[in-house]
Length: 192
Image 1 (cartoon, rainbow, N blue to C red):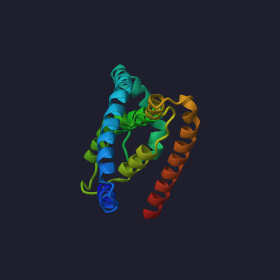
Image 2: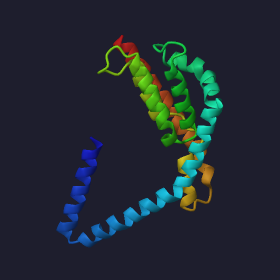
Image 3: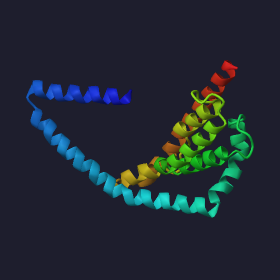
């Protein structure tokens, strides 16, 4: 759906540039924005690689497993349909931990593995379970303690105070998580 929306906006912009005689502006923007996007990717890549490497070390050392055990009391309440010891809980905990560090791209493999594990015990393979939906809500609205990617973007753009975004990020993501999980709980309760 979002692809259609973006496609329509791009077509409208191109048609408008033809009508107003500003086609050179569109051509220049295509070239300049492509270069800007590539520059940004090349500048951010080392930072993301560093953090993803640290998360891989944490996974290999067993730190993420310990974190999963720490989160288990909370996760067992959020995901009551998942049996104790299910590998999905470990992947969910790892996904949450990595997302708390603001590294959504590094959290993706954990999220995919969590969904894969939950799908194994799903009785209706064509329909998402309550646990899958709750995980999607948690993953989408997840609390971010250190918005690493945003701090990196601020660094690359010469921000005077890189970390002033931390407190607003914590507040916004906490409110989003509480709101999302509350709505998920109310809908699940209503559907029972």
